[in-house]
Amino acid sequence: MTLLLSIFANDVLPIFLVASVGFLLARYLHADVKTLSRLAFNVLAPCLVFNLLVTSKISADEFGRMVLFASVWCWASA
Image 1 (cartoon, rainbow, N blue to C red):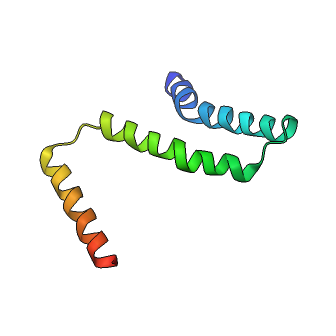
Image 2 (cartoon, rainbow, N blue to C red; image 1 turned 30 degrees about the vertical axis):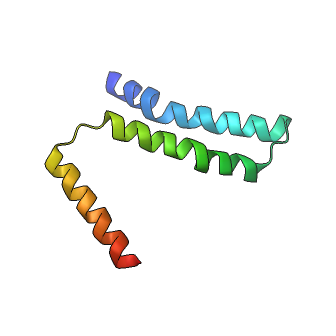
C-alpha cells in the first residue's frame, strides 16, 4: 500500500497539479494557450533537460557513446 501511495505522490499527483493550474489559468485568467505552450516548450523543457543532465549518474563510456551517436545522427541527417 505504501508503494502505491509513493507512486501516486511522486508520479501522478504532480501531473494533476500542473493540469489543474493550467485549467484554472485558462478558465479564470483567460490565458492564451499558444503563449503558455510556447513558454513550456522554450523555457521549461530546457530546464528539465539541464536538471536531468546534472543529476544523472552515467559513466564516461556511456557519455562518450551518447555523444558519438548524437554526432553521427546529426551528420547523417544533414
